[in-house]
Image (cartoon, rainbow, N blue to C red):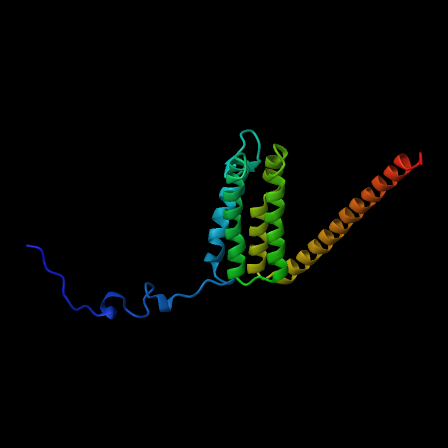
Length: 187
């Protein structure tokens, strides 16, 4: 006959304090624990390096594959990439590094908006691997180098933005000049 379980069990009998199963004895994940980037490593592998193209050393992941389906695929790929960014927040990386990780995701999403070519660009750019590299360098103690690289990245990004705005304004001035000289020249 089956033995009946005892009715009054102390919590200490089930979960002894100080054992690995005790939540209070667990060390929280931070930048110094090896498990800290395990989720990011798995996601980056699946999203950017899942399948090797036969006959080459080039690998593609699920990111460019699911991006074939407009909207839905991009949403799922970007959402999975966002998990790596959230892990960076949890590990308390600097704001510059988080911004660079966000720009990597944004560039990947913008590239996916270009039909056909966006999928190829996404497979080549590998934003999740870039973000994982930033996290690993941060964890290995190269925070200063990562910060400096992020700063240079943003300086280049700002200069590129200013160049595009200048080009756009110049184009509009040229269009207005042509319209004024061709339409109103007869008057």
